[in-house]
Amino acid sequence: MGKAKVHRTPPSLDMTPMVDLGFLLVTFFMLTATAAPDEPVAVDMPSSVSEIKMPETDILLITVADDGKVFFNMDGKYNRQELLRSMGERYNIQFSDDEIARFAVMSTFGLPIGQLKEFINLKPDERKGVNQPGVPVDSLNNQLKDWIIFSRMANPKLRIAIKGDSDTNYPVVEKVINTLIDNKVNRFNLITNMERNPS
Amino acid sequence: MAEVSQGGGGGGHKGGKVRAKKASTKIDMTPMVDLAFLLLTFFMLTTTFNKPQTMEITMPEKPKPEDKLPEVNEKKVVTLVLGDNDKIYWYHGITDPKIEVTDFSANGIRKVLMTQSSQIPGMILLIKPSEESRYKNMVDILDEMNITNMQRYALVPITPTDKELIKESNL
Image (tube, chains in turn blue, orange):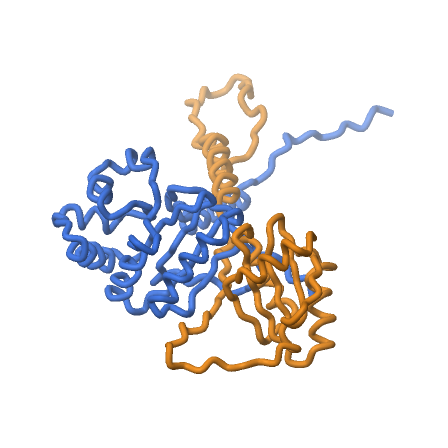
């Protein structure tokens, strides 16, 4: 008896469906990915069990860093243009049309209004290197108050959110909250990370 | 497509007609597929699905000078003072209170809130964050109010009396 010969075929596998799926997923993730907005400070948010999602538009975001600096951001290109125009009038600073257009596409900043013009005229990658002192919130020179007033005039639908770092000292947050209450903003959001409800 | 092909190159011919060798129409797509999966991995790992959560709080309006503030029975009032190092000082009532200290763990403040609210009908909580407390403490205590379903609480500034009480208690 001769040995039974095993017929060998080269191991070949049709990978077409896998590759199809692979490309489908690539396309999906590429289209859903959003570039993270560049923030001047890293903020480590506290967590809460709240399940309310943050709305995506009409947000005025006040960021409080752990060293007590306050940063300001508002969305909406046209609202930002209007905001800078009225802030310029309030503080007697003349912003050119070009500067207003540049401000409209900027993100979070934390500067006294006097330094803002210089900051706007920097190139976007130069802005990252600037050590921003924060928006003044002292009772004598409360510029945050004016930013809030004029933002709400530019966009009445605005919702106000506070994004604070866990380690921020309470007095700073208190100052921000009091500024909001003084401007009759009694309802605002605190941005937190998610935590599981223990009950 | 992207299959792994083996051999198939050397099939010698035995006499007969000499055929023109046809070039294979198959393209090796392995590098492309490799790249595609690399990108897939990258986007999958960098995508974050969780939008930030928010906690909505509504503060009372600033009382006008002519407004009459409501008076409450001091027996119903429980004061929580947020101290340094994540400590919570709390006391029941206002005159001659007995200060106790607790923390933010599940057996700490949550237990206190549960027992107090079952003993005191219509309990009113006053949350007083001290200057040494951090933002995290404030968020945590408001969160605790949500978890334990407290109906009546208010965030109020700390008074010098409270500070003295805490200093005296040495807790």
